[in-house]
Image (tube, rainbow, N blue to C red; front, side):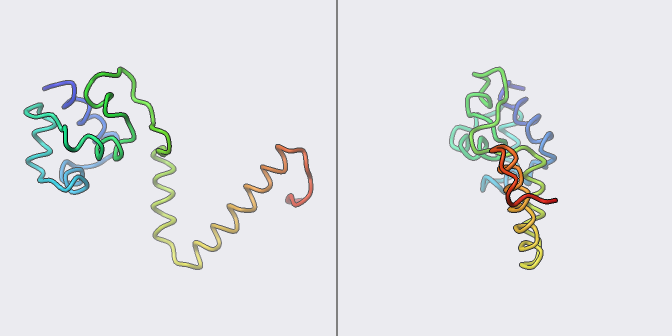
Length: 121
């Protein structure tokens, strides 16, 4: 196996995904994706998609960087799970979450700026 294959397998398993799920995301067959993990071929044409999916740089996937770092704008797994839950909520449920999030955000902004106006008491 290659370093690229090892890293792809580790990233996929860390994300709790099957080879089939990754292949579907990339728009390729599971067999084609399996060739990436087994080191038969490098995922040159699918590097951007893999980087986005796993939140790491293409250089990391290819073994040119030693550390996996979240890309700018990427989310941690817990945040990603929360976003998925939010998306599944009804419109009313999302409204409740939005109101709560806005209130907590404003409270923290006020605390940071030293203001007490608009905070919960």
